[in-house]
Image 1 (cartoon, rainbow, N blue to C red):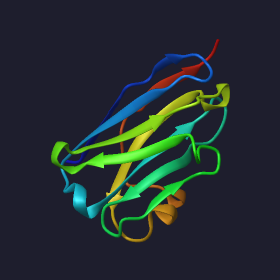
Image 2: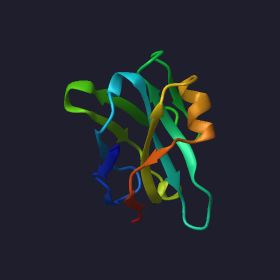
Image 3: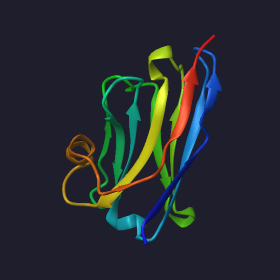
Image 4: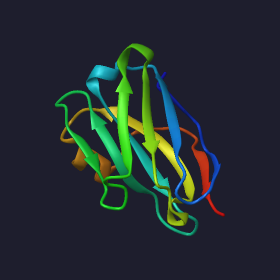
Length: 126
């Protein structure tokens, strides 16, 4: 059974940093695309960063490029999202999602995934 569990959310001031973790179980990390999706209050969920272990591609949405970094530790079956220079508009629920690699990280980040975690709340506020 595929399972993704997020952790690391919390309250942070603008300009601060957080690192989210996604613990993955139930499938092989090296065959999957794992991504982070952000749902701001009152808005639709958006893929912000995905990493494809199959073809090595990485995608960042323009809104986070240069501030967020996605990485994976296959041995620990964990994917991380390092978030720096956080802004109030980064507030929302962050979901980890995964799926079998079918295309590039960008395409799968935009199209969505089959397996989802329950999300972790990030609040950026002074």
